Each structure stands twice: as structure tokens, then as C-alpha cells.
Image (tube, rainbow, N blue to C red):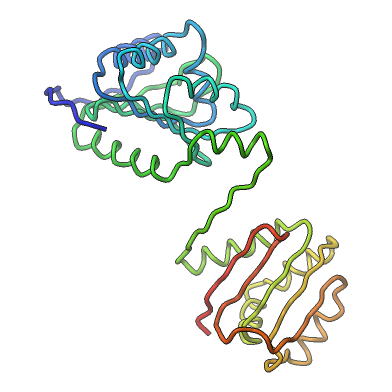
Length: 278
């Protein structure tokens, strides 16, 4: 968002009075000349589309004056109707698990508040700052979130038509990838398929508790298939341990690619590929 060329005194204030919070927000909206960027939690959109509410009036006035309005929130089944109304006024994007609320105006003023109570209730406190370094930092943070967020129309379509989003994400931290693998296996409801490049990699996951997770899912009657290289058989004791699991199949093949990749497919919907160091 473009910067305002006017000079403003630098200060930071915390406001607790409900009427004063609404008045300050209202005055800020009417003072802006270039743009207003807002990031709000899932309860936030309702505040901006209530007929006759001062905040709603302020946003409508900014739109009338040609001010660019950008808004990031988490769009859910519960707030989708408010978001549809908000889209008529702002450029709206969706981001998962938005917490807290903040807004930057003309890259000169930042206002932040605690979690919204929903409806027409204002937040319990408002932190307002015109400290240049802090405001610029918040503007930069908003821009990062804006690039990461997806268009509201796409998210609304996902909700209304039950479409699951396609995405590819690269995770570098080994502990994060292991946690994601555990979470994916635990969330399975239909089927789990795992391809281990070597028995050594299988043994490594066993030490991390993966076998216990698979056993738990077998007890939940989730079919599990494990694929291993024909050249790399499981030790006899390990084979005895898992061959008794119902709904768990182990197959050997000579068709596995010569790589260090472990692949996990859950419910034919999500796929995780991890490069092993062993």
C-alpha cells in the first residue's frame, strides 16, 4: 500500500473505553486517503457489515471515496454470509486460523485489538500506534499474509461445493515432517498406503512410534498396505510382530525406484513424500 507523505506525531496509546474505541476507529477511517488493510479473525467480518453500525458506515464511506480496502480473515461455514456481504466492499482473502485483529491505514497508523466477541460488540481494548518503524513492520507483515492468503471466491466455493483444496508444500524441519506424518496417519478414515525405500527406513519409523500408530488404526478397522523392496526383507521378529495385525498387508516388489523416498498416501486424498537420510 502506498505511503502517505504527510508527517504525523509518533505515539502509541491503549484505549479501553468502548465508546472511545468505536470513535477512534471511525475517525481513522475518515482520515485515510490511500488505503486500509485489515486482518481479522473469523468473528471480525460481522462487525463490518452490520447495517447502521459506525464501522460499517466508515468502510462504505472509504469505498465511496475510492480508497483501496483489503481484508484478510478466516472464512468458515459460520461466517460465510457476512463474508459475502463484505466482498461487496473490500478485496477479501481467506487464511486459515487467523488469530487477533489489526489494521494498517495509509502506512502511517496501526490499530490492533484482542479477539472479537462477535456481532456488534467492539473489542475489549484497542492499541493504536503511529510509531513509523512499528507501522511499517505491521504493513510488511500484512503483505506477507496477503500473498499467502487465497481469494475469497475460491474459499467460498470450497465450502459450498465441498471441494478440497489442492496444494504442494515443502517442509524442511525433520521434526515437523514427522509430526505431519503422525497427524496424517491418525486422521485416516479409509485407507493408508506406505512405501518404504528400505527396511532400515522402516525400522527407523518403528523407533519413532509409527508402528504403534498403525496398530491403533488397524484396531479402528482402517486397511493398511505396506510396500517394500524385494531385495530388502524384514527381519523375522519384526515380520512376526506385524503380520498378525488384521487389515495390514505387506507386499514386496522389485519395481520400487532406487531412491531414498518414503511415500505415504492417506484416504487417496493426501500424499506425503519424505527423503530419508539413511
